[in-house]
Amino acid sequence: QTLQQKPLEDLMSSIGINQKFRFISQLFNEDQSAFESSIDRLNSFNSYIEADEYLQNTLSEQYGWDLKDSAVKELVDLTQRRYL
Image 1 (cartoon, rainbow, N blue to C red):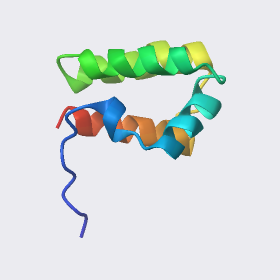
Image 2 (cartoon, helix red, strand yellow; image 1 turned 90 degrees about the horizontal axis):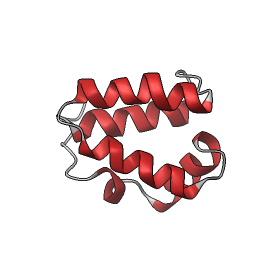
Image 3 (cartoon, helix red, strand yellow; image 1 turned 180 degrees about the horizontal axis):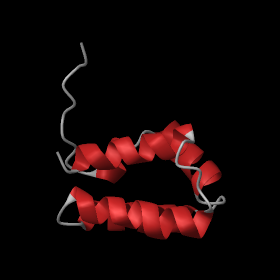
Image 4 (cartoon, rainbow, N blue to C red; image 1 turned 45 degrees about the vertical axis):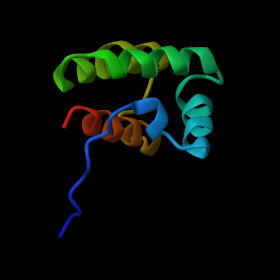
């Protein structure tokens, strides 16, 4: 049985400090401003479909993400919850 996932109001405030540093280091090549602007964009879409397209087509291309990577999966999960 899985716990019901609660929707997230805001991505930035939902990312813990350790998670934030992990994302910046592993996903954004140590670039904190790139991380912040990307999270702001992910927060601002009208639907998960738009956010997912940005994740898959823009960010993952730009940073060469492996979509099976655990940090990538965490970010995708958080983004999904933002749009529940």
